[in-house]
Length: 136
Image: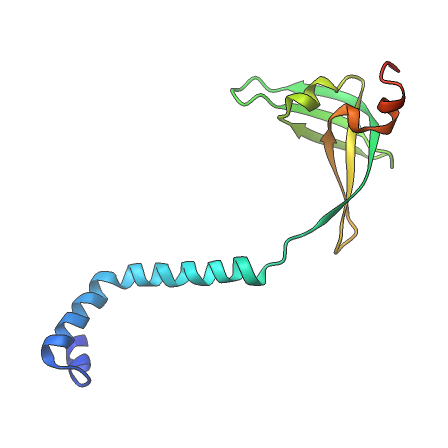
């Protein structure tokens, strides 16, 4: 059927070759087309969510759990400066070493929405720890 339609525009041999190519490579062509469309939207249409650093703050730690799997991870429960509780995780050994009864948290703000974001940071980044590192 397809070679009949193609033979209206091409010679009979070319129509058979075109039909063979379309049957053989149609899935590959569709996947390639979808990949190109996806790459276009990824690189030219989607805007990344940007964050701005605000400050480093020292927070109180309420609980620490170390995972025992092959990817060592530390789960830390903290009380943020606004009084809310948050559970944070880290895989960084530099951050591991600075967590005792308090931890250093980087406070960031999402530019578009103004939402506050937090992440664990090495203890030496906090201004309280730079003034008096032995203050426990």
